[in-house]
Amino acid sequence: MLRTILRWGGRLVAVVVVLIGAFVGYFAMSWQPTFPDTPLPAIEASNDPEVIARGDYLFNAVAHCSACHSTMEDYVGGGKTVAPSGGHEWHMGPLGTVRAPNITPDETTGVGSYSDAELARVIRHGIRKDGRGALFMMSVGPMSDEDLAAIVSYMRTIEPVKHEVPPSEVGLLGKVLFQTAMDFFAHPHEYQVPPYVPASDTASAERGEYLARGPGFCVGCHTKIEGKDGQVAFVEPLLAGRIDPDFPDETEPGFRFVAPNLTPHSSGIMHGWTKDQFVKRFRNGRAYPGSAMPWETYRNMTDADLESVYLYLTSLDGVDHSVGPSRQKVE
Image (cartoon, rainbow, N blue to C red; front, side, top):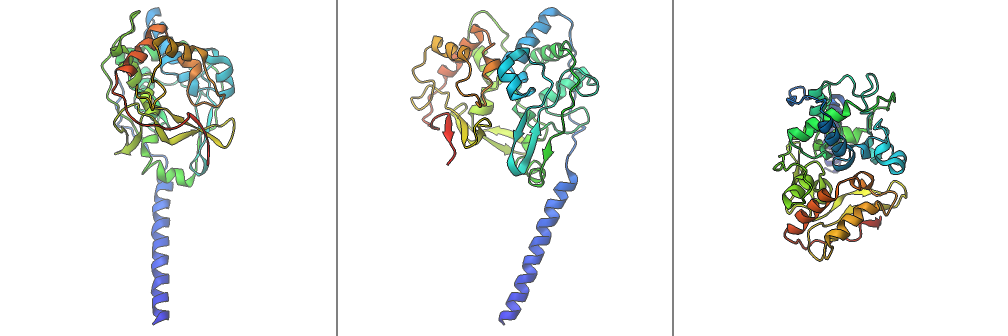
């Protein structure tokens, strides 16, 4: 009897192993999926100096594109003067290593071969020219057609840099998870664009909401997220802070950063801050070298825009949610 049980038990284990192997093998073989049907936005670059200047501001301040598309050393040292020629790496253990590509208009190593609409698609939906998902482009916030066209217009004026960035290395576990539980990292994204409020010399909570939920994308880090049907779903309430996933301190192993609560509750970092203190904090830049917060770009925002974000954040209902200090030792 015991031998029979062991024999059938062994067969069951063998079947389970085969099924798991087939499951993993399927996703390994199907990596990297393509999404050729993702629409191309009707966006065209402009030669208007005012539009290009607005794109410069959005690219190098609000949307913080230069924060990711340069190495950490160059970015921290040079801010907006650094060419976005790629190279920054995110080390994700068994999931793999993700590298930011060169997005200067070089024809062979950058995005010089992209049409205006193809550039707009990778920014808005995270889909490359060849239809593949651009890993982690889900972290780019939604924006109006006006702002998207301005960014594309500015990108056409960047000096081309020939810099071949090695492709991202996705491990076996990453190939499975980026197509299942974590598919929002590598699939097309579709965010609802908040009501567009153009820049003004006068601060307003409405402009602050557009920036915080849109191109500035404060909600992207400071709100709990979950994957749903290949999309990022923000778990209400917005901007109440997030512990998981955290952000490793790549300058000092053993530490991590968490996104603090930005609502005006006493458990959050905004409690008791004045508008002037808020603006000054951004002007002062990073307190920790390895911080995931793109201080070098956000500090280039205008006073009116920073004040607008402050007005929006302080208009929110306070949420009792403490995440602890923003930099923590990993237990």
